[in-house]
Length: 112
Length: 116
Image (cartoon, rainbow over all chains, first blue to last red; front, side, top):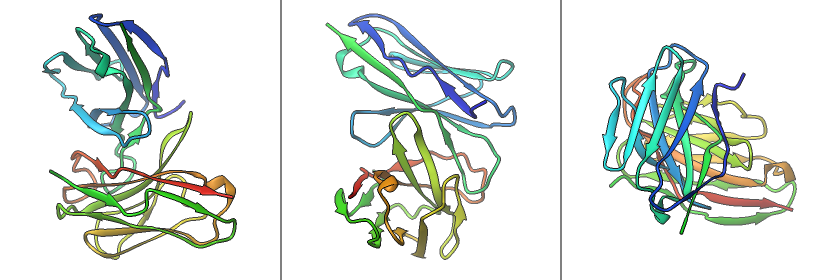
């Protein structure tokens, strides 16, 4: 089983739709969780951290479910500019130096 | 804003050449990383460092070495480039003391290396 697993997509949604991605992780001791966004041929950039209580940033909501070992990202009122690949990132605590493990990403395409 | 700069954006090298990829960060971060990213495989950690002159192997260190002589600079070296090292290489940095700081990681723009 991969340490971090994501559905690669693509998720094709109309503008204005609500879309949700899940990501599962294998190490129950993991402490830090993030969603990164990566545009085509660009570097990943932090979208948001994921906290146990869940957190919201505008149209984006992130949730953590420790019991089932998954995190989720919900995007409301999708914009064309949301089209990107969304990377789930976990600190599995299996190594030193703030070593993060990345999922392979979920591709989102928002269409007119 | 955090700035992670990779000096070489696009390189074409021949098989067997020695390749240096340089990375500099301007935020006094303790931790620095080198990843490669390939379609379908995601980001894979090559090497990381959480202090000057210190290095740790990541998941795929074979064929690579690194150097961290100064806190702000982390270099990736391909001693003898091979075609299977054609990839996008991403340098990154983060703050925090010790291995479990959990702080945000910031990436450079990437270096696209083609080995022919």
